[in-house]
Length: 349
Ligand SMILES: *Cc1c(COP(=O)(O)O)cnc(C)c1O
Image 1: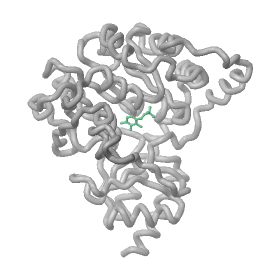
Image 2: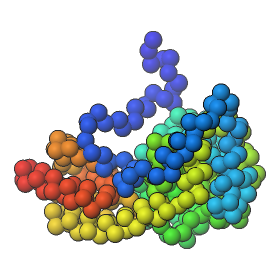
Image 3: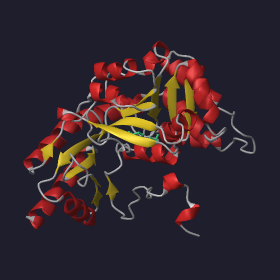
């Protein structure tokens, strides 16, 4: 067995970030307020469910709940195993082997992964000052599909809605807007899916909803586009338990509101604390912050991990030299993080 067995487009794909360190995780933007309490209630009821039967083919009960939540139609929604599956399905349905996908740079690492495993190529247009979109550059770049996330990961800022509109209206091609952190900002593109023939919006239960372990995400688009996407989706990919938990979470959003409040309350003090330690802090509209470390980011992250807290290093990327990404936690978690960071800086300077 050797490299020649592997599909040629997979040859330069490496395994994804999979830290083996046991430390407190402020590296992956999961909800640090805790698990969504609706989950445990559903788990109890679920004990009585006969699991020898399949769920519905396209998870219709969850699509119906989303339709109610957004006042759209269930045929505007596709749901599945995390919003990551939704991105994968979009490319399976829309991308031909060797075609380009246009994305901003820097952006979410898994975007390039899903483009590559679906035999596409990624073409990137650099973000401008303040990590804002360059809609003209994106519209000028040839490619079959445009993909972007707002708020952007790892930079944490939201893009201007008018810039995104310029991109949606700027070409006759699908535009995927990944709103994984959409609950933390005011506007959304979901209410506009019926106004455009080329708009797909993805969202997840993994971040503000506090259900990352359940792996549920969804995509919204106009009905005919949704019908096309569903053709490429593995039927039955979402398990019944996760579907039930997601439905319950849509019907009781108190925890999501508390999460957003916690993040809004703690973002300022954490930023201030980081600044006084010598970090350059970039503005955040999400549940995480991008900062530039005063010492090597690689060293910072590994020394901090030894003290029991994990954050994510992005310091090797162009434009993000020595930058790290930190998930915003509770007051206590942030205080502990700042204390440990202070120790690391003291020991390394
Ligand atoms: C976390 C994240 C996702 C992943 O969502 P899942 O629903 O957990 O698969 C998608 N996009 C971005 C930008 C993210 O940061």
